[in-house]
Image (tube, rainbow, N blue to C red; front, side):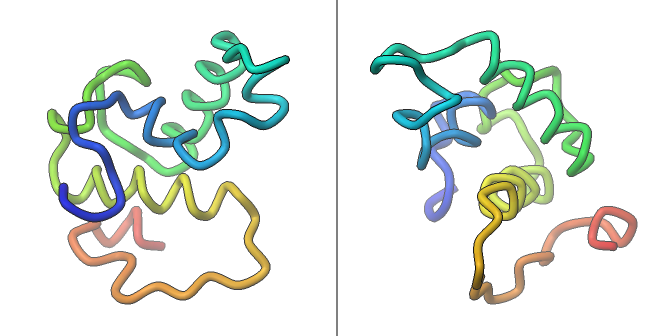
Length: 97
């Protein structure tokens, strides 16, 4: 909860925390809530994040699911290079795969 996420914010807000000012997440500086919500639901499903939905506060998640939020955010940006130290620590074997 110290590095990588803002525990008081929602899963959705954490997933877009590094891109909320860019298209298609916002239009003219105004957040595109419909797109962000739909996109967040897709990441939750893709990364098997167990939660009550994109609006759920990150602080309500288990440590492994918090780690999945971080992984979902970072991998979804399609980086050319990603350096990570123990990115799957705390995540179940099935989700790690």
